[in-house]
Length: 383
Image 1 (cartoon, rainbow, N blue to C red):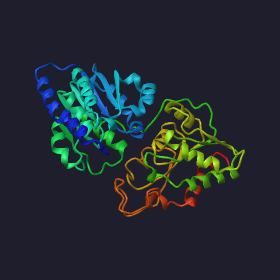
Image 2 (image 1 turned 180 degrees about the horizontal axis):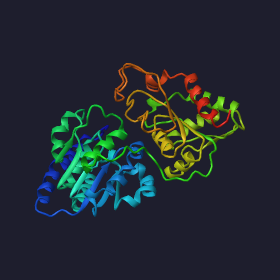
Image 3 (image 1 turned 30 degrees about the vertical axis):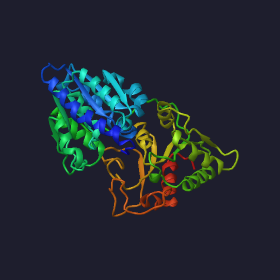
Image 4 (image 1 turned 90 degrees about the horizontal axis):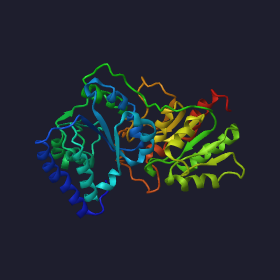
């Protein structure tokens, strides 16, 4: 979190730590309802990996008859409403990052949660944030469960831990996010029979056409160089007649323009960057032959649609989100350049130019990526 207005942030902290204490006292003199809240405020890819566990939660005997709400990130509202409304009594969406400097909004949202009179609050995200912890505290449920993450900022950890009645310790042998979700719900639901669930969208695949390139990500230094994506596109144009689709959100429009402008006129390349909503993007990926991308939510969307994908993968979160566990046998190929500093949590020790990618990304060779592309589309006889 990057704080620009320290005074507003101090007021938000006051709401989190002081007002939540008042709410907790008030909650002790009321009878809670059979209502459960899941707090899931992280990004699109995180939700795609998590969402199939909502069905596990709603079908569990332990919370049978409960109303189950989800406090989520506004970024993935369209996905949640489209695919998951049948499992959720109510979605409450917010822009979590903006709340740090919006104390009034934080207070209003906290009061809204408090009025719901939840019996249980679950926060299954391992990397807890101050604002997510704070909203759990403001909800003031009878029971609240989260992970005990020892890497959480020490400045607030001791105080935010008090918002929870139970903190789960993650075994060292469990690292991937999918397996973390599995462990969390096994413990919460006291059910060892729950199976590992890979991401899956209930989408119809009416055709299988086109190769999608998603050349951006949430942070430009995790992006493979645009000139290398351009080279991959040029090679594809020489070897396949399949349409090539450049995709992305509004942040990728400039990058997509660069790629289009540096291709020969009349190339079989379609620019969809900034032109599709999430649900339409999912449908497009579901009906494509292949996705080529950086480590983004698009990788998990392709997996959820059972579409082949190639991920150009850095080392910041290696094995936490990608590659997938062996038990999740999806057609996902990861291309990476292994370095001793992997799993740095994207706190890179190397000095790089502001516009340059991290070394674990820039060291990934074009030939290695192209080799995976050839292998992926050869089976479909696209070459």
